[in-house]
Length: 117
Image (cartoon, rainbow, N blue to C red; front, side, top):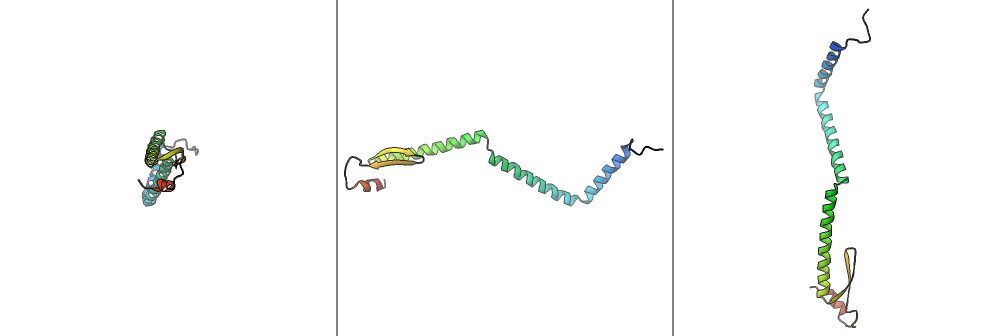
């Protein structure tokens, strides 16, 4: 009596593989559509992950760029305050606090602060 447990799977396993290949060939268009959808979803996942988790080098370079921009802004604004004979009080975040003629009672003080240079 032959063993029905499948002791010899060689030819039967190959036949199943051939059947799978034939089924794939018959449904190759749906397979390609599934492959394109899967690869698109994988690409979106990877690019989203990269966008949400920037590398430390990128974070460092962005910080350097923003620091340089902030320094340039402060230097420019400080120069404008001093050119218009103002007194620099302090820096508040990305703002500069200054006042004009704090010790003098000039009628032109508001005009000095608003005069374009």
